[in-house]
Image (cartoon, rainbow, N blue to C red; front, top):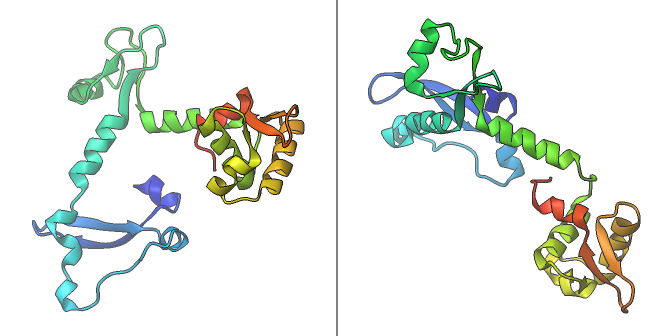
Length: 204
């Protein structure tokens, strides 16, 4: 939760006691993030809604903990061993100061989410940086998976054919992302092997 706060995704709204009398933190989406994405932000006014946020229906603690368990890997750092442990073995690992019982190497907790994000960054760094207009064209060409004319994709990406042709020329000559078939008039376009990689990663 702290990581989400530091990266301005959520904000700690207030502390309250829930229906069971336990102290709980109430979180909300970051105001700036909500504003940017046209999400209505705020709370209902009036005393009738005073305890609205502490209703049990809004208690997502178990859901968050389950998600953490699903994305967490407890693993020996020795590549030759690589033993993976489950949550039930944590008390034993604490007793051994997180040393692997098989090879006595250090045991650490990894996040699958972090590894997936790192992989996406690595993939994204292998391809040229493009603008939103360029990315729209690339992704649409990838979706079609064959040569097509600018007018064929103009409506789909809400762009004039002439503008598409200009951008495709740049993507071909400067970045090698698009292949132009110059044997027909008007030209036809498809993505190169480099261009196909944009559909494999999340690029913004």
